[in-house]
Length: 105
Image (cartoon, rainbow, N blue to C red; front, top):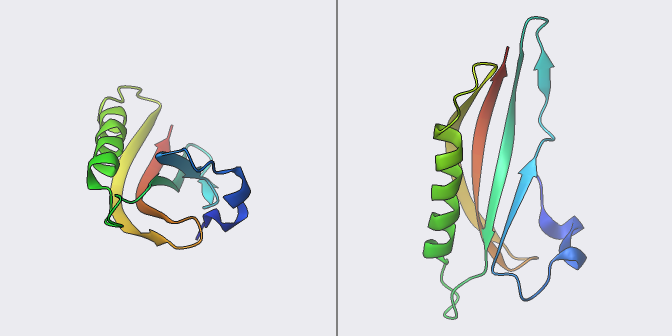
């Protein structure tokens, strides 16, 4: 599983959100097509109270859904598998991880 611990020095305190695409999962070459999974990490700074910043994460996830569901390219399919959420205590950011299956022709 990816962690921001390796990128902490790159994150600016002024940032309110962050998106990372984790392509470290195996993409299988099945001759006629490819199949694999990517993880899209959506990060947001907590509210001043420390609570999860749901409005920011929701806005990011809505934009991601619009991109996924607007795909009309017949050469590949993007299938949303699910979402996990948590808190990265090193980066001090809440996150949602959206798993996407990719199938290419």
